[in-house]
Length: 223
Image (cartoon, rainbow, N blue to C red; front, side, top):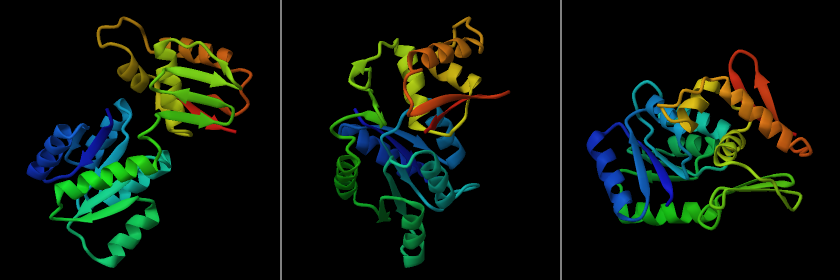
């Protein structure tokens, strides 16, 4: 099931869109402003983002620009009351994929979502390819130069997270909150153990490196 993030400060519209998407085979998560959306993105992998432009604190332009700097591939659709050419020009310049003017026809929204997912090649496969390495999220598999690299579920999830957002630093606490149960007695240094294991398993891969950001956590750097 594809997961869609809806960032819209109109509470009623947010709820309407999320409920409609849920009824039509998607899993929608609604946020009322950008900071709330950032928090959701730390803990989840989304397939598509729908965002308003005029929002409190951080507007849709800044939000989309930040998202695009972290993830070049995730489809972003603006859903806004702003119908002027300059807004559309700025949005597409930032890197959004589509633009809808309110009031939005929900059936048309559904068609656009399907087209965007197909265009992003997410509809057929959820995978990341970095040089000679392919991670497949559906199969939980890692293939390096045609050879399967055995990974535990947690190892796979950690690596998939890092490679989904190259150059983005994730703190140990963020990774612990996402991939360990709240009841877990493991300390944040457990993350270090897993990163060491991943480095050992992929020491022959020349396409990326797991970098320690001292005092914070880890990031993946593509070579």
